[in-house]
Each structure stands twice: as structure tokens, then as C-alpha cells.
Length: 116
Image (cartoon, rainbow, N blue to C red; front, side, top):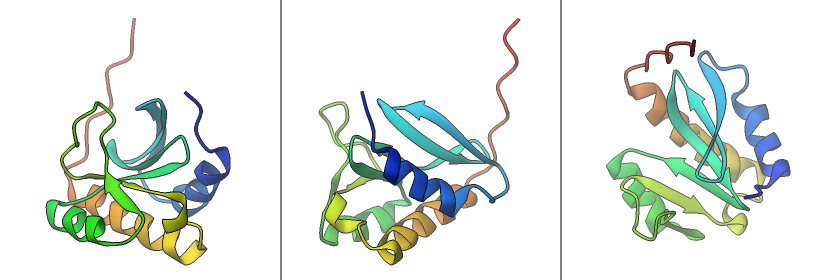
């Protein structure tokens, strides 16, 4: 499944210098991780955010958002932001900052063992 390369590039510019930054293909798109914890991602043209329960509730009250329902059921604490909600650089920066804050609040994940 394709994802918006321009959006991925914009997110990459916001996160790539942060400690523990990595990328991984997930959900048919691209996800950005901090210390092994998913922060945000891109699925098709949607921004995906992983947030605290409180922040997810607030985000869903904002315009241009929806529960992430990748599997057909809403995923707890995951929010889609539609293109209209992240077009402005400040809006994208604010969303990514919120998700990065949540990812940083989680304990770091251990790197997977190398495959032999």
C-alpha cells in the first residue's frame, strides 16, 4: 500500500535529529519511532498519531481527525489526521510534537535480537 512520500518527508524533517529515531514500515505505511515506541506515521495520505488516552480524546474533538480504524475497529489511542488537518506546517509540527511527547513518556523498547 502506498503512502504519501511528501508527508513522510515533512515528518522526517521534524524528527530525524531526535535521540532514538527510527522508521519502520507498518500498517501498510511508514511509522516513525522514538526509542522503539511508535510516535506517528503515514498511511496513504493520513497522518497517524499514537497519543495518551487524554490527548487522543482531545484530538478527536479537533477538526479533521478520526479514530484509526485500520483493522475495521478503532484502535485505542491512535488517531488519523486528514490532510486538511496537517496542511499548515505549524499544525503538522504541533501534532508531531504531541505524539513525540507521548512516545518519550514510554519506557524504551529493547532492540530486537539479530536474526541468525
